[in-house]
Image (cartoon, rainbow over all chains, first blue to last red; front, side, top):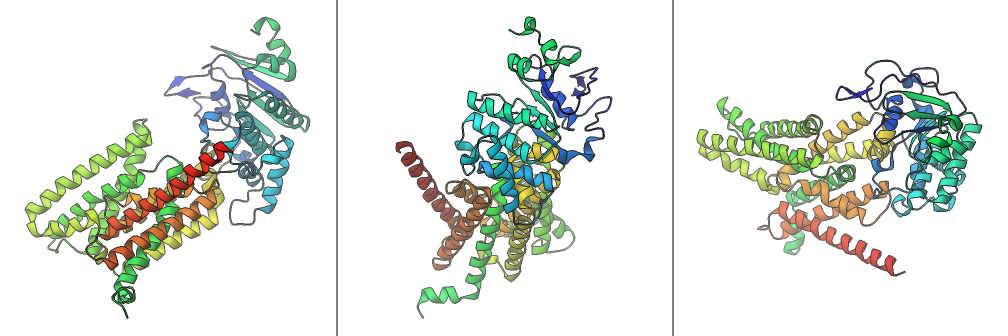
Length: 220
Length: 291
C-alpha cells in the first residue's frame, strides 16, 4: 500500500484468526493506521489483495466495524450519544430510509449499557469526557454486531474507568467469536490482555502471541 | 382598509414574501450540513460564480441577436456558472490538497474576476445592458414573478423529500463520513445531491437577495439554530424555521417601506435572529458555568 506512490507498508502478509483480540503496535508513522485503513478500502493498495472474513471487503461491509482515530471526529457536532450508537444499529439492519427508529434506539441503548453509558445516552457528545466519547463509539461498533472490529486507538486519551469498560467490551466481543484488531500504544496492556500482537516495523510485519511479540525486553 | 393591510393584500407583495420564506426555509435546511462540515462558504463561491455565467449568457444572447435580458437565458447562464464554481471548489480541494476555505477563496476570486471582465466586455458591446445585470448583484425582489414562487416551492419540496427519505444517510455522511464510507453508504452521491440543491437554492435566491448576499441564506440560519439545540434533526428544523421567519420578516419590512432593498432587509433580519440566538446560547452557557 502506498501514499503518493511512496510505499508505506510492504510485504504485508497477515492472517488474523477469527475470535481473537489482536493488538497492533509499533512506532509512530510505521503504518499501523494505514494497515487498518487498507483493510477497509480507505487507502489504495499498490499490490496484493485484502480478504475480509474470507471474502472481498465489498461483500461484508456491514459486518465490519471501523473506528477512526478520535481526531477525525468533530466533537462539537450536534448529536447525542444515543444517536451515534443508533448509527451502528442502522448499519446492522440496513435501515437507512424513512422514519420509525424506535427499535434502532432500543438497540443503541443496549449497546451503550454494555459500555456503562446507559445514563449518559441523551448527552450531546461534546459534553462527555474523552473516555466516555470513545465508549460511545465502541457502543456504535457493538450495535453494528460486526464480526470484524478494526479500531484505531480506542484507548487514546481515555481515563482508567473508560479504559476498563472498553477492554471488557472488546473481550466479550472476542468471546462471542468476533475478531478484534486494535491499534494501541500501551504495550503492557496488549501483552497482558490481548491474544495476539502485530508489530508494524520499518520493513517487516511480525505477528505472534502477544506475550512473545512483546516480551518484557521490548516493553519500555 | 389601512395602507398597511393594502400592501399585504397586494398580490405581488405576497408572492415576494412567500418566495423568500420558502427560499429561507430551504436555505436553512440545505446549509445545516454544509456549515457542520465546515463548508459554510461553498454558497459564497457558488453565488459569486454566477456572475460570469450571467454576463456570459447576456453576451451570447446579444451576439445571437437577442436582447441580452431574457430571464431564462440569464438563469441558465447563472446556473452554469454556479455549477462551474461548485465543481471547481471540489477539484481545487482534491488537486491542490488544500482546505475548503482556501479552495473557496480561489474559486470565488477567479469566477468573480472573470465576471467583472465579462461585464465590461458586455458594456462595450452594448452600454444599455449592464444595468439589467446589476439587479442580480444586490437582488431585485421587485422582479420576482409567480414562476419564481413555484421554483421556491419546488426547491423546498425537494429538500424536504430528500431529508425525509435519507435523513439517516445525511446525518452519517455529515457527522462521520469515514464510517459511512466503510459500511458502504453512498457518501459521494449524497454530497453531490446536496451540492445540486445548494446550487439551485443559490441561483434562485440570487434573484431576490443578490449574488453577493445570497450566502447568508445558507449560513446564518444553521449557525443560529446550533445555538438552540444539540440534535441534528432539530438543528435542521430550527434552521429552516429561522430562515423562513427572518426572510419573510425582511421581505415584509421592505414591502411596507418600498425604498428599503429587499435582499439587504432579509439579511438584516437574519442577522437579528442570529443575534438573539447567540445571546441565548451565551446566557445559557454562563448560567451552566455558574450552576
